[in-house]
Length: 486
Ligand SMILES: Nc1ncnc2c1ncn2[C@@H]1O[C@H](COP(=O)(O)OP(=O)(O)OP(=O)(O)O)[C@@H](O)[C@H]1O
Ligand SMILES: [Mg+2]
Image (cartoon, rainbow, N blue to C red):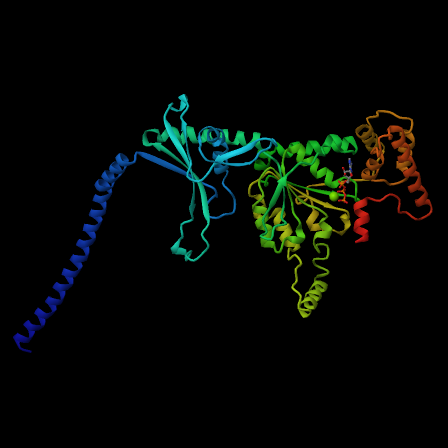
């Protein structure tokens, strides 16, 4: 190999190496520059930009949106608290107001409409006197292109935004906003109109009306000792937040009310709600299409509420969920053959068990779940075992003390010569408190305690006679008669 070829090869190789070094250097230099530049921008330009922005607009802001987190599952407590806190100021200062019905039938609950603003001040102990303001707005939700969110339906997000000066940052974040929440909660408690919600809506969500049932424990006839036990149990539950946390149990309690029709199961639910001052969510299980929908409904329930499923044995094929599965499948096939859409609820026993004590059941806390049934024996033991349905309450036929209680409530009589007769008849025949109450209700202006009690004795004797003759129909709860005739 001649020297020229060697030198040629060398110079070619070193040329490649040199150009590689140059490229590498360029990349490193570029990155170094970028890093420094970013650093520089962060340290100097960013600060100046912020200062400039502060001169142009010296206000900082905190936004409190209507929904927690990213989803639309639960509305944020803070949002409701701010709304309640601002109600008075809004009524005084805002120009355009929105009004909703309030607890008191003659009053209205006021809030701002989109774009309105109201001013507020810090208390002296929070630094005092500075005026800053709250704005209410409704903004279309940002579309998140990263997650392919485009094309979806745009929904409006409502929020309150608080504007304040940087100098008050500490006071606002650490003293003012916590006070807003506290006072907001107090206003909410004061204005709370209890709700009776049900899931009749086609969208598998709740629709509600004001809860106005008059039944209380004071007007519920039952054995006084049993009544006291239930009231004490409810009070222990309501005050048991720390206890439930200590034993690591979700703050909820299940009650199973069982007994013949007309023995006061629904009345007991109303009395419980009135005693605890809770909302009622009445689930019509046959309208719930699937386990997922049941979970959605559950998540949308609020704390301090009683969730009721009435006549649980009729709502679902729970009892036979396992044994009658085959029959159900056959029915489905038949429906498919007939070209009919199967509209029955797809909620399963396991879905319901999950609803009661699955992971989701712990969200929110302070809930009572009540099942009512006329046929305890028909229910799957898994559904009603302690831990799920913690307290089983039997609602029975009317007994002597319950009758005397009803006589006091309905007729205002403490004692009467017929009390003993009624008492002994009630030991021989079964009559529901609903029927006793009906007999004790005056039907005309001429009816008094005497005539009502005589009517009751006559009704009891007729039931006794029917029983002796083997007819056994006796008095019947009118709703039950309807059910039978259906
Ligand atoms: N123990 C009771 N004390 C006072 N009133 C009662 C009692 N039990 C029933 N009633 C009255 O009787 C009527 C029917 O009672 P309720 O609807 O609570 O019965 P239920 O047990 O829920 O019946 P069902 O099983 O048919 O749903 C109501 O008007 C209720 O006020
Ligand atoms: Mg009922």
